[in-house]
Image (cartoon, rainbow, N blue to C red; front, top):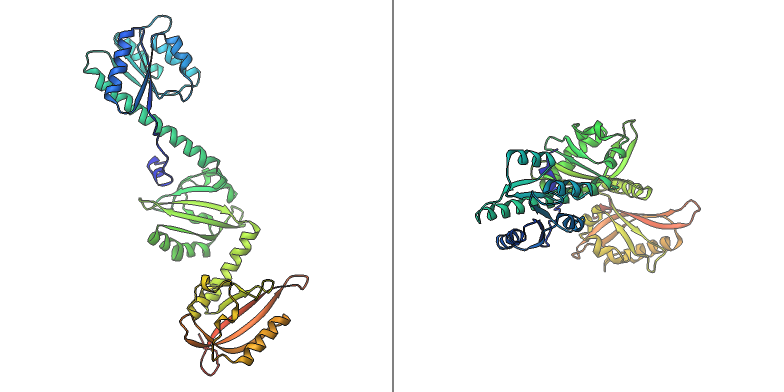
Length: 388
């Protein structure tokens, strides 16, 4: 996987605290000199010096320091033995061997032991080199640490998270993503995303969703995937476009309530497409307020949902609305009965329009009234519904 893709997933933070360096050298003047030069060469650095490697090892707890700079030739425990002991304790911070006793043999042993940097002591000109190498080691280690933490978070997330390249091929996905479709990761890495969607849904992606993703940089909504055995998976999907043309996918299976809402949204899209304006009225609240309207209603009346919801449905009536028709509608609503009529209404700008109105009561399984649904369709001045 191209690790550069992860920069578009989340901005893993970098450490802002001071860089803490542990210096170990049995020569007290030399270790103090090293600390002085590092503090001079590096910004925002703290140093701790030890002449006894055993005591230094006792101080090496996880997270206490960002890097160790150690001499090689020391009594009781040399630099490589210090490194081995630290690694056995699970201390994985960078380790630089800064020694005055250099040889090909020591260099070879240092590399085999896993030393991150090997430098020989010299004059003052060596300290800028040491400082640069220490700074690079710490920066690299911090970045890798945050990356690992980020991956652990992604891997353990309940949401499915996947990365798709510019050709639509899965480059990465976590276990939750694959499990949603009753698959494992090995089956999906290298496959095109359309293997997880029925043909009609794949067409919707190509014709509607992906163009919006390209234009706006993101898309979120309801979609329907398919498992390996052909079972449909109602899902909530969030797509975010990356600079390289690919995108990040976050997916969750819908709950039963979410699935019902998705079904309502689908029906709304169908009714919007045929130009039927819909309002839902709640009879359990004072003055029977509108609690929902669809896009077709907004287009017909000029009102947006925020301006209508919470108001009585009679807010569309005006001075030339027939009072007898209004009385008939109110009587039907009060009685919990359906009504169908033509009515002169008024839009958000005060302009009158004729509409054919159907109001239907919606009841639960026990017959209790839950709400009214009003269907508006534009009509001509003679009251005939427009053919659309």
